[in-house]
Image 1: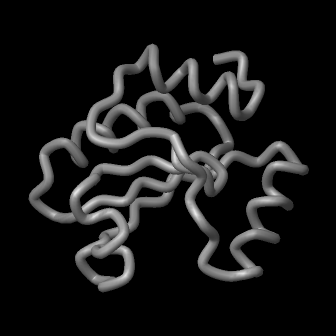
Image 2: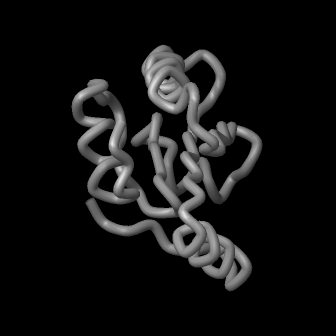
Length: 106
């Protein structure tokens, strides 16, 4: 999948810092009432349990720019600021993505 553009130099610097320090940030773009979003959040929470990772859930319905960017693709998962998945994701797929992008041994 294509990389997601950064909204500011601060975002780019933050992701670079996180990657350099081994910190993992999982960002899930979602909206209320989205059952696929609920499913992906439950999966991400389950896989991230017991790690020091940060899981952020962003409601795109509160931001016109995010709604325009992700409205037809939600849920969308970013790993350290890079688009990793959308719509549906299995635990095996998420584990493979996280191993490839973070070196996680999970």
